[in-house]
Amino acid sequence: MSFRQSVRISMLVLLVLGATTALAKNDLDRAQKVELKRQAINTMAEDAMKRLFMESPAARELADRTVAYAVFDNFKVAVLVSGGSGVGVAVNDTTGQRTYMRMGTGGIGLGLGGQSYQMVFMFEDLETFDRFVNKGWQADASANAVAGTSGKNYSATFTNGLAVFQLTNKGLMAQADIAGTKYWKSKKLNRP
Image 1 (tube, rainbow, N blue to C red):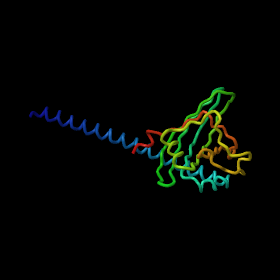
Image 2: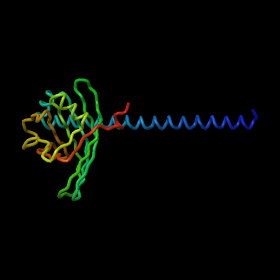
Image 3: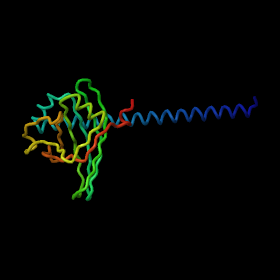
């Protein structure tokens, strides 16, 4: 083998090693970003649950009867048509397993502005929770986050195995509309 061939082979090996290292670093960077996103979602969920329990003792009592919960951080914008998106986590209280999810909403109607809010779902049974997580869930036109008439002082109950609460910067919302909203698993955030 000539000196030139040795240099070419060495350069080729260095290029392959450099490319492999760059790809591995890129994968590591992606994994780190996903983990940081999961941590941020978990922190948001913990904060939202603490806030809900502070604002509603009835929600705290209801939580004692749940088998699972899900919390989403959402942002919605309306300019004649409305749309929004968000992320969240669904937690099985028995196993502690976390499933990271996304949500999207859209609609037509009068409106102008934006709103940031958290949605909290409490599940009465594992069947309802599993259906929510594995098949997704879509709120129909009549769906409401029912917190009663006063928001804070209501009798919290499950409806079809589910209780839903909406927290805004104004507090716990009574009769907050969630129609036109869909929830589904995030492929990206649930990768190992």
